[in-house]
Length: 212
Image 1: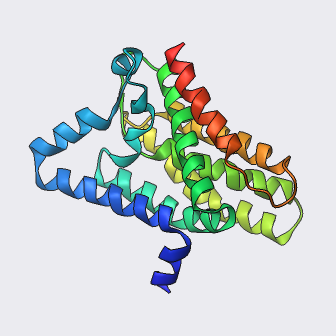
Image 2: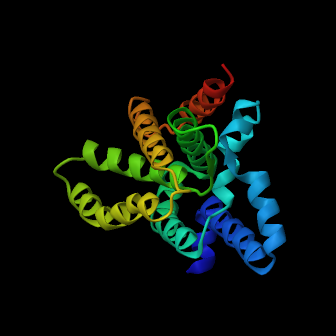
Image 3: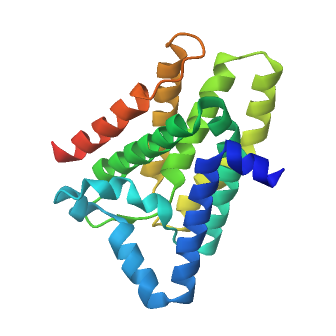
């Protein structure tokens, strides 16, 4: 069963494996941990200097054990189902687009001295897409099941910025709204046509939003 899941959700399991590996390396070597954080974190004044890729790289680094635990649990619950539905390429673009919009919100609504890490913006994008699907299917068994099941997970992840200030509520909000937006864009395409254009436009827009 596990091998089958990995074949149909390769991006989800790669992200989980890479995130855990980065965290484990940092846990074992404190100096390397600081170097990785400095290289991959969204440091807003560096973003302002043109290092726009830092909108996306924080998805691989996490601040503490509970941080990566909650994020990877949420990704494990949501990711495979969504990836199987829209395909690995669209899923990867969706994930990056939501991370990028979360990064833009954290950049525009935060301060220049902020340094942010974590995949929460991207994961909240999955919540947003899932919520959009449930609302579009209002009154069905699918809608009731989704709305009844993801509330606790969403609440736990939403509470993390209150526990650890390096986790950005702005990033959560941006990613969530991006997921809703992309979900609506896909809904308006011909039935069953999952195209990469909506998340690609969001990724481009995220980059332009910090460069202009």
